[in-house]
Image (tube, rainbow, N blue to C red; front, side, top):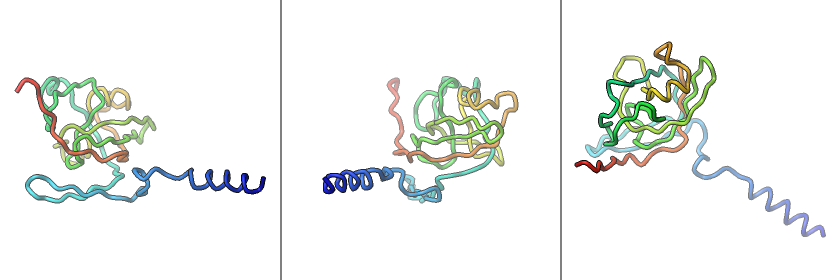
Length: 151
């Protein structure tokens, strides 16, 4: 009986550990290289100001080749690999949302993220235009471009 209890406790102890995908810790970083050979090091947590973009870009092609949907849950970041999943927290109201990086930007000085209109609605900063946010990388993307069907 003692061997059974020991075996069960051992399985519980060694079976309950963090997934390797998320096991690097909050201060981990990720390195990617572009086709031109430029190497970029990414932090897994960032804090700064986010804005949003909407009607002017709706239906146009994003930097990764897909069609921008202003009602979708996507965002633009200057350097994170395309298809990265990020947890974005509005620090002014604690609303949180998971977004996928599919575009480049923002191009306004002092901003670290450009959310889609739909994301900004859910994060609660449409009326203000910008929000202080924390970005936590859930999973670094494959940085692949989408293939458009119309081309």
